[in-house]
Length: 84
Image 1 (cartoon, rainbow, N blue to C red):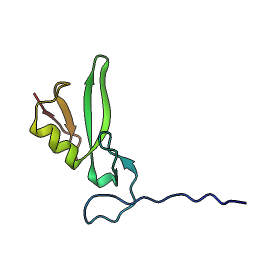
Image 2 (tube, one colour):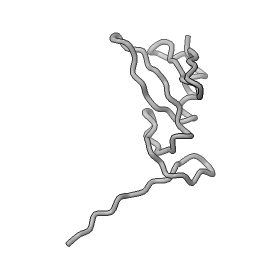
Image 3 (cartoon, helix red, strand yellow):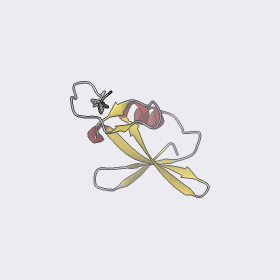
């Protein structure tokens, strides 16, 4: 009989050894909660809440986003618009 084992992933952020809990919405890399940022992506019906790693966040900050302004949720719940 084969036993099923839960695969434990570690955060792919350089120097971090914490257990990864989520994947980046864009690149799919596994990260711990500390190394992912919540963004709000505008839609016709409101917005979607997604998680991005630091590398993908920087890509959105450096170029105008094709979907319009993306809201980045700060550590204290504050929102800032990027790609305007």
